[in-house]
Length: 200
Image: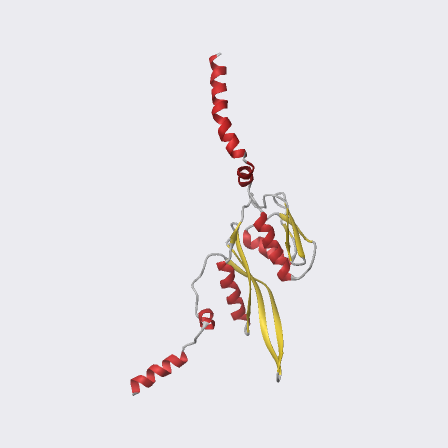
């Protein structure tokens, strides 16, 4: 009986469900985590209000890989942990040209629009607070950005992510246009002409 009671009491002390997974100590993962925005939410129920927290978190490795997510919980730390876990699972990779973006682009999400343009070395990150943290997490040090719509921090950050998804490298554009295949096909002809010119 004593052994059974000990086992039962030990089981009661352990946390159960998804909440337990976030409360346990997690190993250090790759990338830097930054909290962009934390808001307190309230739900009116019988007998008063039930308060919660919503956290907007960005995770980036500083080399063109970044993820953003929102987490909700009754505690701030738990909301941040949820958002961080979700952001790591949904990271995207985009091309970087030196320390800036390859080309001009506009990202839209909801009522928010973000315009961004490559900048010369030494310009720095000229952008609003939410987009600035996203650029820093992604490893972009020189860029010009401007919000053209809603100032909602969540929509602004997601609009910036949509802009990142549209970025393409010069090589990728050449492949899409077929220039790479044409250059490969024309290379042997150019060599033949060069040899003929030398023979003459």
